[in-house]
Length: 131
Length: 213
Image 1 (cartoon, rainbow over the protein chains, first blue to last red):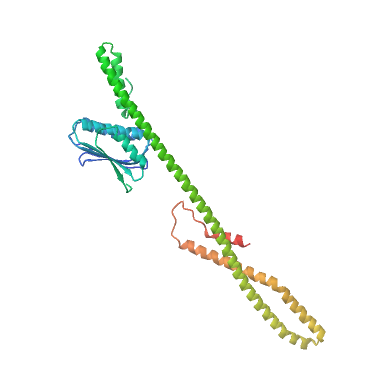
Image 2 (cartoon, chains in turn purple, brown):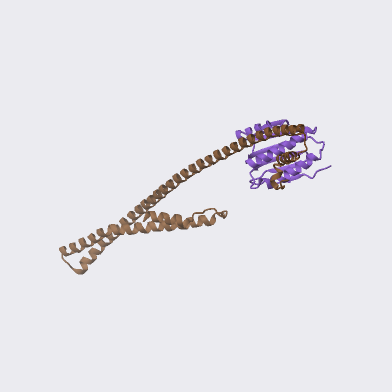
């Protein structure tokens, strides 16, 4: 079953989101402090739930490239990671790449905290260029 | 059953568990073993929930700290910019005063030269006229000397006011020349973006004139 990809353009307050199974692109890039986190993230979570519940045989590599996110976004990021964990538990290969800008210890430590909550292979990568 | 709201999307796992355990509690037909299993599961889920709470609290604190340090940095930079701006304004005022002084000095020098040339010309002319006057009026030497002395005294008395008048003339001329030059500069410049402050050249010129007066 081919899934319609989900593309969300970035704004000052919300990240760029690419969920494209056909091209194996799953990315979250930018800032995340939407005025209404539920309104922004619900379609994303629903899309991912439906995708994973349909049990596709697909390896997943998901990139997280945030400069900043607020606490409510943190909850949604955790839920996304749990969904990826569920996908791995169904026998698929998953990989999470967590990017942080050089010297941004807050984002580095956030990645380390998330890394401890799941068993999915989790790479923490320093980037030197701005996105 | 709790009414599904948009919030449930983020907390669907937790809500599902609440629904499940409520069902178990309300079902009195369950065996002791089933209750025990449910309780054990609830215990594990509670530990997970506590870990999630700790994680989110830690993330929240960290993000708040990042915001705060960025805010402090912005305030610091804002203060630095304000200080630089103040220093620049001070330098600008000093430059304006210096330019005004130079202009006045230049005008003063010009005025002095012209005043002396003028007086010299008048003095020379008066000497020529004196001879003509003397032969025409047929006066004696004393009277002639008196008229000559009086005329030269008047010339000498005119020295300062004449010099001042000529100096003011040159200063005014320089102000008008500067105004024209500034207006031409502004007209030559490209149009600015909307909202950008543009100091009007007349304001600048008027500022200079105010300093001179």
